[in-house]
Amino acid sequence: MKKLRITDDDTGEIILEKEFSGGYHLIYTNIDDSGKLHHIRELDNAKFGEKHWIKNFVYGPIANKLVKKFEELKHINPKWVLFIEDMGWEEPKSSKPKKYWRARISKANKQFSEMTGYEYILETRNYYIERMQREQIIALIYHELRHIDKFGDIQPHDIEDWNNVIATLGTDWATTQAKIKDLLEDKILWRELEPLVKQIDMFSLQEFNRYMDGKDKKAL
Image (cartoon, rainbow, N blue to C red):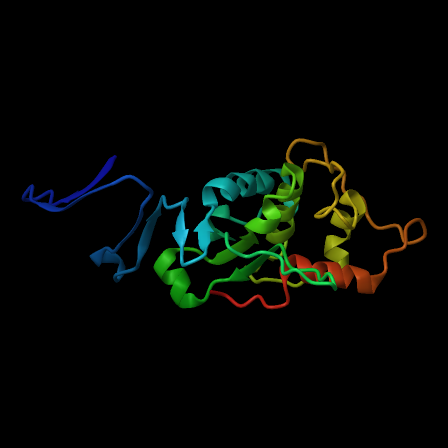
């Protein structure tokens, strides 16, 4: 059990005292900086809405290690990202199989960002996550973080930017049952696509990218 206590240092008065067993997220202001909102976020494992769960305690450490290891991610601060997972979605049964997205990242709108301190929302679907190997999940987080450019904007897939992932891990890295490289543990020498050796059909690649991230990236 934890106890949150706010006291007035001048008088010793206890203004607020609350016991709780989970995480916490505090928002406070100072008079000397025009009332700017400040955040203390330790709410890494909690329910988010009716069907989502905050999973920063799972994906945050992965994102931290990826940012430290790969130069192309150095501009990203993982603390800016809220990781949420849809725990209720299931792949619809259909006679005509369809590809559905496994993860997608969006930029939070200004109001959400101000109140929570998060600038991005990375959403995953537990239905797929629980069927993926650890190496695939790590690659998935890398794949989504690559959408954040150096200006803080969200960029769509670009064959020139993502061809190293396809060439190194294969076009089916998210769905294969075979073991793929571990981006955190293995030494990664990114390969580039070699059209003369292995032709990648552009339409197939676009279809793959669409179901990885989804077409609609509206911020929550």
